[in-house]
Length: 573
Image (cartoon, rainbow, N blue to C red; front, side):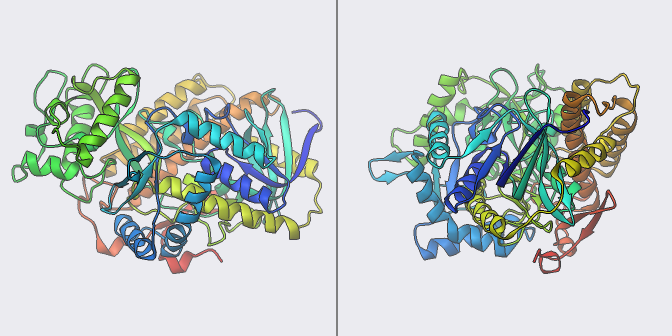
């Protein structure tokens, strides 16, 4: 590291992460009169999951009247299985309609027909209130124009390595820019909107930038985390091109077989469960859940891949031709949606009328940073929004609510961060604070001075470990193996960069985020000795009513402290 940090900037509100939540937060803060700087780790917009190409579009859950608001709330609570924060759920459902209208004002287009917007039921809820985008080019251009219209400065290819904290207050962040130079950014308020961490898993439907940086930045700063064990897994193709495969297609008649062409359901599903009931149940929601009989399809596929005879590219074969190859002449909802999706897959180079290789892919994180009603963490001046937060979702997430979450809490975070910026004052030396923070951060990085494993090798090893041991089906022995392997990677197998290697520090920071995030997930999963929603334990297959509390994780002198706690006992004031 150089004697001084030459690149120093000051702003009212710093937003870290330029996906849907970060953009919404930046817009709201700018409209409130704040000077806003928006930074993105990757090359915008390719680094944000909002704009990824792995699926046709995304859905947005909203309501059209007061009765629907109540129904929306009830469905989230039902899906959450007691892991959600009902106060934040109430805010989400009440603010969703206004934020949807904002998206329309931005120019985001949603699927419509002759009778207006097409609404569909989301996963884990029957209400027909989810509207869907189908044009990623439109989404990118609409958000880009919104940023320009509000005069927001966006700096991409800039990775934040640590938050600057003094007197229990966030004062900004330290980053490494595209030229591998350190940048200190002072801010009166900081918003974390870095998304999830699905890239910690070998099979995922996201970009390499999704390494849960926000979780670890917040944890290091002293913020509380929750619900880290609840990861959504959905199906995706295993050969090029990699795309999401919705379980809605898995109707009775679908066939699943191993690498030798043999039926796999007969070897894995219970004798008392019929294929028809299994597939009808599983086709009601896209992500895996232990909540219903549909789980046995996921368990069968996961076990076949990890211990049996996988397909050529490490999955299983799915033949869906019997269910989607003979659609009725009448345009019912299922047939209409299948025809639209088949056309998208065809354009992407995938023929769903032929057998395809599929496996579970990490898709979204349901837990994260605890916030209060104003989207502020327990660290003063630090706010959070989007997939990086916990509370509005629980053990399972209502389909389409993630995008709703980004807009509702992005708006709240931006508005309150701007208000915080009006009243805060800073008396510390930013350069000195940044320099101290940098050396402290380097000491936290994984590895030893001399080690043979490269960062890419370590990431690949970790991702494989997480998919196999901390994936769809978990066990005490597998979670213990994962935790030992994570510790070994962190302490012995990779080379720690020197403080003068600023580019290496950024790469090591991403690896540390993955290692620490994986540890938080595995340890939380180990302590939750039951199956609840997206968390499934082979050795504890039933939901335990006595464990109906989220696991809260606090930073105690650098070590994670895990405790079950009721919502009212851990609410951030």
